[in-house]
Length: 466
Image (tube, rainbow, N blue to C red; front, side, top):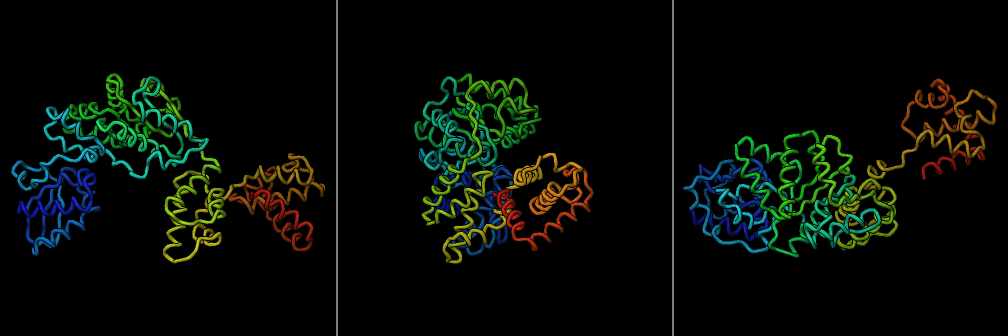
């Protein structure tokens, strides 16, 4: 049985590669065969669920190829007893390649802290594996992110430099904070493979701390994290209101900085704006380099789309890229998702990418990003067009040269906003909703009867929409 299990593990290692195997699969142990089931044990529920969802089918196929009596593979949570060491296979005794040792918490960590942690392998689910595509080479630099990019580059070349520790990156969702953190980790490892880097979300940090408290094993938690050379915590805002976890992070922060280790943190707000974070922690977070990533510009969005299309080796007409860059302004993640969806549709149906196909495939996305026009903007534009005062929109004056523009503004408010008729009426001097209904129908009638008037209203609508 040990030889059979060793062959299966060896073939799986060849299939997925050394790095992925050591990150997710190394801790598998074979409990035995129960009926038609091969029972595999993993130390945590997280690892069990991950292996089952990502490698379950492949393991079942490998078992069926090696043992005709096995039809299913069952994954269970259980710490492997010492007697099962023989079933782990001789290949587990072989040291990993240098490049494979640095996913998550690097293997030198085990050598430095093995005496304090009798089971160092149990930490493999502490960290998030780094994304291979998130490197400095694939990060498109523009005005909104050039400072944050320069700071990350500096830290990757000289970790723990004075003035750059900690490095605090902040900005809105989908603007590139996580990309920069992963890129920094890859670059640090490339410059000095001996450095150990730990990257995890603030949520993961909290859950591991709680688990350590419950198992009365906080010393292992502390020593594990304080043995790394670079600690990266993503989405720090998750710790708002979680006082005990904040305190532990504060002590970890101090211990690492005192040892000359690098801290890199990301959040959606600057340290000074993180309400709910203890003052002493907020002060420490702001004592290094704070770099913000602004909302993207049209030029940066277009550059990102061009780079993504080139990397995918897909010919996308410039007009389509311009359409996406103009319409999808919220964040880079949505922008990339829209491009991927467009390319996938073209590949699946063998059709060229055109402006029309982009509107068809991305109609929901483009509609969601249409410019939201406010009633105030409509009133201002209509008042300017008809050369009346803005206050006339809500006044009681009924002169035709005022009443007609007011009706046009009500009509456009109904067409271009999601406001109800009573809401529109309130914005026009607390008028009744029936007044708005009359204005809308009257303008519609006049547009049919008077081509010049219709042209005026259409022009105003286009100006507001663009």
